[in-house]
Figure 1: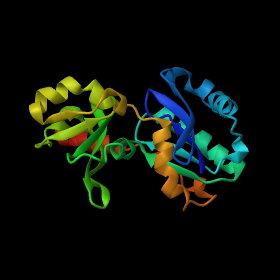
Figure 2 (figure 1 turned 135 degrees about the vertical axis):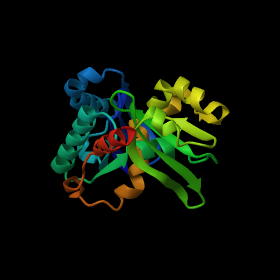
Figure 3 (figure 1 turned 45 degrees about the horizontal axis):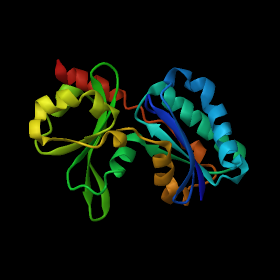
Figure 4 (figure 1 turned 120 degrees about the horizontal axis):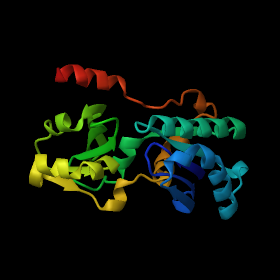
Length: 228
C-alpha cells in the first residue's frame, strides 16, 4: 500500500512516501514559517525523487493534532484536497497517540507532550497492555506545572514538549521522570503513514468529509478556571 504521510502539527514538520513497510523517501523541515510556501512543492519534489506519481497513491495519512493550529490546518487542507482530487481515502492520526505508539514496547506509562500557548501543553497518558496501546488519561490541555502534580509514579516522557520542559519535569518528578532518545521526540511523517495502514484499509474514499483537526483549546478555559 503506497501512502503519502503529512505531519505539520509541530514546528519540525515532514512529509513521507511509504510502500508497505518500506520508506520510499522522506523530507524533514525546521522551517515552519515557510510551510505554506513549500508544503505542496515539497510533496511534488518528493514524488519526482522517488519516482512515485500521485496517481499511484493508495491513500493519504495526516497528523490531525493536537498541535500547532495553523500548521495542522494546512496539512489537513492539503490532505483533503489530494484525497478529493485523486479519489483515494485519507486518514487522520492523533499526534499524541502517534508519539506513544512508537514506544509500545515499554512497561512504563507513556506521556507524550506537545507545547501549546505559554506554559500550556497538549498531553495524555497511555499504557501498553496485551491488547495494545490503551489511553488512561484523555488528550487535553494543561499548564505544565499543574499536569506534573498529577503524576506520581515513574513515567516515560516523549515529544518536543518533553524536550522543552525536560528540566521542569526532572525538577518536579526526580527519578520518576524517564526520557526517550532524542530522535524519538520528533514525530515523522513516515510514523503517521505507517500507523495509518490498518485504518486505511477500512477507510472510505469519502473519508475526507469526516476529517477534522483536533485543537483541544476549549480545555484551556477549563484549566484556567480551576487555577482561580
